Length: 166
Image 1 (cartoon, one colour):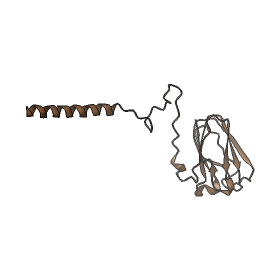
Image 2 (tube, rainbow, N blue to C red; image 1 turned 60 degrees about the vertical axis):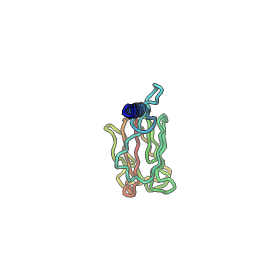
Image 3 (cartoon, rainbow, N blue to C red; image 1 turned 120 degrees about the vertical axis):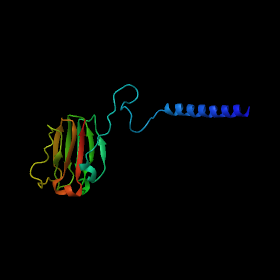
Image 4 (cartoon, rainbow, N blue to C red; image 1 turned 90 degrees about the vertical axis):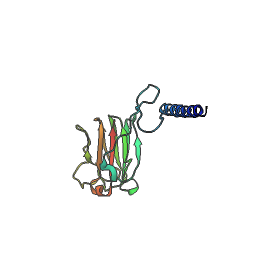
């Protein structure tokens, strides 16, 4: 009889462990990476955040803006005399017009990389040609992909930015 009780306990324990394992395998993950990208209600997919290139790892500032759905967006150049673009990271839809507003002088906008067919030419003149405060450089970005840019005189100080056109 003692042997049969031990056997039942052993089998009961194995059954409990198996049940716990099955239940653990049925749990659902509701956050974090690894989802299918959908919003869960069968509607439109939510785009994953862009994977910014390592070029921007030392960009000064960490401001970001998701301006998808907007037809026109402003990027501040040197706000309050700083050596930053604001926002540093920008997400827009194809066809959005980007207005680089020079909020202080002594800066420019130069393309570092862009998708084939991209139209980010940057401000006129050479690498050190400066734009005065109050001026604006505008560009409409049609090609999807990641665009990176910098300020020629302040590139080494991390005055860089990126735009994800989606």
